[in-house]
Image (cartoon, rainbow, N blue to C red):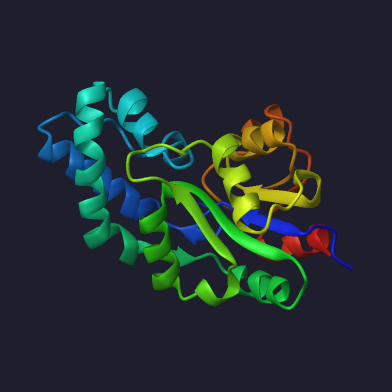
Length: 216
């Protein structure tokens, strides 16, 4: 028996181990802008929030420089970022089980939607998904409270009470709470359990296959 009609997955840190590629692309972008790059050793500081927030709050760029940074970053991501992604062990097992169920499945990510589609194609998991939902090229529709309703609409106007968001950061937790969907936190990604708990999370999976007990 399935517990939901729709399952929404965050991408970075939930489906894909992607930190090294993201870090390299931020470093290259800051270098091209001739701006000092902050310490990027703590992945939890910039994997999860929307990219423009990272450039603004973590990197200290002005609004004008953020607007310049976004297309530069995407260009580097096409070259270096996409190929650096790899699936977390066990993700395919979960996606295969969902594919054989009545549940609809979408990626719901703050990453630019085109880049997300490229990552999914690189990982070879597109056939498991009913939708790939990300931010627009202009940087809008970047927050989870905007992305989750977009994903549910794309999947066929699934009611929030019949959906679950799966993610690794408190941004995912807060987005789920704001939109009325259930939430399952994964602790193998880049966020912390403590931050998700502080945001209200109560269900956690230590590895991808642990998700199955929450979904069925």
